[in-house]
Length: 510
Ligand code: HEC
Ligand code: HEC
Image (cartoon, rainbow, N blue to C red; front, side, top):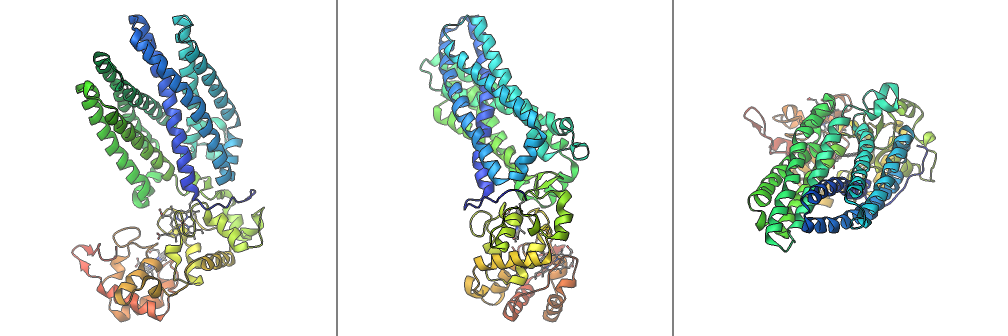
C-alpha cells in the first residue's frame, strides 16, 4: 500500500492483456526468427543457393526491424503498464530479480547489436563470420528467454522461494524447465508460420513449393515440441492450483481447451497446405494459419495468467497487491492506516485498493450489474464475502466498518431504483433476478457452490423461514436484505423450481 493508485477508466486486466500479448508474440517470434535465419543460411551457403540467400537477406531486414522497434517499444510499454497497474507486484519482481533483469537486458543489447550486424553484413562479411554473428544473434535472444522465463514462471509457481526467499529457488522454480521448452517450441512454430506466409509470395513456382514445405517443417517441429512440453508444464503446476481451477475457474480451463482446438486445427492446416499441397499455399491461407497459431499461444498465455488467480505471485501476494503475510495486520488495524496515499474520500480509496485492480463499476468486469437495485447492507456483506464467491477472489482484508465505507461508495455509483423498476420485472421473473443478484454470485444452479439440494422443493413457509434465518445457514452466508416485494418474488421464483431426476433441475436457475 506504499504507492499511489492510478485511477483510469480502462480495466487494468484488459490493458495489461493488450500490451503483454503483443510483446509476448513479438519476442517469441524474434527468437524463432533468429534461429531460422542462421540455420537456413548455413544450409543455403553449403548448397550455394542464391535465391534462398536473397530471400533470407530480405527476411533478416524484417526480423531486425521487428525485434528492434516493436520488441523494444512493447517491452518498455510493459514496464510502464505493470508499474502503474501493480506497483507492489512490480516492486517485488524488481527487488527479487534485479540481477536477472540486468542479465536479461544485457542479452537484449547483444541480440540487437548482432541483429544489426547480421543484416548489414549479409553481403559484405565472409560466410563463416556472418554465420557466427547469426548464432550470436539467436543465442543472445534465446538466453534472454532463459532469464525472463524464470521470472514469469516464478509468478505462478514460486516453489521453495516462499520459504527461503532465495533467488535461485525462485528462478529455477517448479515450472521453469517445462515452460522454457514449451516457449522454445512456440518460437520455432511462430517462425515457421510467419516464413510460410513470406514464402507463399515467392514468384518462382518450384522455389515457392520447396520453401513452403521447408518452412512448414519448422512449424511442425514447433508443434511437436509444444504438445508434450505443455503436458509436462501442466503436471508441474502444484495439484492444489489445478484442483481449484478445475472446480471453480471457468476462464483458464476453457482457455486451455480452446488452445487444444487451435493446436489441432493448426496441425491439420500445416500438414495440408505446408506438406501435401505446398504450391497451393496462398498468402490468405498462411495468414489464417498465423492467426490460428497466435490464438493458440494467446490462449496458453491467458490460461497461465488466469490460473494464478487470486494471486500475482502464488501464495505470496494477491492480485490487488496485498501480501498474504500482512493480511492479518490489515484485518486487525484496518486497511486505511496502511494506505500511504489517500484522498478525502476513504470509501473510494478503500474500494480502489481492495477491488479496483480487478473491477470497474460499469466498464471492465463491472460491479454495477450485481449491485444495481440493492442496498448498502447487502453490498457490505458482499465486500466481506469476496472469497466465498465465484471468481477466485482474494479475501477482503479490512474492518467491518471499512466494508461499509466501500459499500457506501459503490452504492453512490450504482442505480438505486428498485430492482423491479430497473429491469421492469414482476412476480417469479423478478424473483429470478433477485436470486441472480442476491444469491447468484455465491450459488449458481448447476454451477459454483450449487445449493439446489437445499433450495428446491420447499413450500412457501419453508422458503420464508429460510430467508429469515439466512445468516445462520452457514459461516459467511449473509442475511437476506431485500424488501418484502423482493422476498415475495424470490419465493415465487423458488417455488417454480422442480427437482429433476437424480438432482435439481439445472436449467431452472441459469
Ligand atoms: C484479484 C482480482 C479481484 C479482486 C481484487 C476483486 N475481485 Fe471480484 N471478481 C474477480 C473475478 C475474476 C470475478 C469473476 C467474475 C468474472 O470472471 O467476470 C469476480 C467476481 C465478483 C463478483 C461476482 C460477479 C458475478 O457475476 O456474480 C462480485 C460481486 C465481486 N467480484 C465483487 C468484488 C468486490 C466488492 C471486491 C473488493 C472488495 C472484489 N470483487 C475484488 C476478481 C477480483
Ligand atoms: C457472499 C456469498 C453468499 C451469498 C450472497 C449467499 N450465500 Fe448462501 N451460503 C454462503 C456460504 C459461505 C454458506 C455456508 C457454506 C456453504 O454451505 O457453502 C451458505 C449457505 C447457504 C445455504 C445452506 C447450506 C446448505 O448446504 O444447505 C443455503 C440454503 C443458502 N446458502 C442459500 C442462499 C440463498 C437463497 C441466497 C440468496 C438469498 C444466498 N445463499 C446468498 C454464501 C452466500
